[in-house]
Length: 267
Ligand SMILES: Nc1ncnc2c1ncn2[C@@H]1O[C@H](COP(=O)(O)OP(=O)(O)OP(=O)(O)O)[C@@H](O)[C@H]1O
Ligand SMILES: [Mg+2]
Image (tube, rainbow, N blue to C red; front, side, top):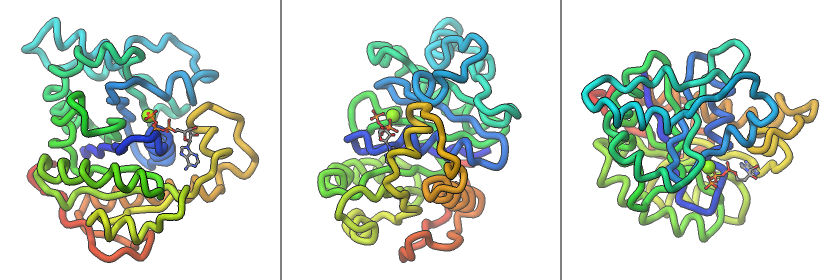
């Protein structure tokens, strides 16, 4: 169905936490694919006390299988695992050792094809972009790219050149949006203006609730109705609308420009 890539410009703003929160609040079948060459986060974090069966080799297994048989279809489904009880939300866990990043490079174009054609939506966590190990094939194939950044000057400053490079890379530069985590003095509307990219959602800075997702911390009673979870739900709705129709629904931040149709050709 549709592929949404989540990226950061660096500084660990919370892209893995956001991607996981989106997956867990997604209404239909969804795969969270950890494609950050610098390493995985969900298995040793959120899943640490929830693992009941062997997890398998995840993304590295896919890479090795693809390497062994370059002409066969990439056997993605053999390497994904359920992370919600009803089996609706699945995880392709990422590499543990960043030295394995080199083995991933030949995989990206083939993985991009499989992810785009998968039955169900795919949220791919690419981590920090801009380096030589950035999975560019996934970015090119994505229906929407969401950059997660904190509302601080250093993060906005780091985002600018990376967004410029990204806009050159993707087919439809309008299919790029921001998710701003409110942690500094920079306002989302300012980030939008400076970066010439629409803000799809603002997330609160909620370290206690975020730790439930990033570290598997015990949730408070209010977790499910927390501002963080409600904001993630809102971001998810915005992403789905954009991926399905290319037209904006309500503007989470009252931001101006709609994100234009996400290049129907890439669906
Ligand atoms: N909305 C939020 N509010 C407060 N803290 C958050 C939020 N989102 C994430 N965090 C915290 O930020 C830290 C980093 O989160 P996470 O691992 O998701 O970042 P990342 O961008 O994926 O980093 P990396 O570059 O290491 O992959 C974690 O401690 C997490 O709990
Ligand atoms: Mg991460």
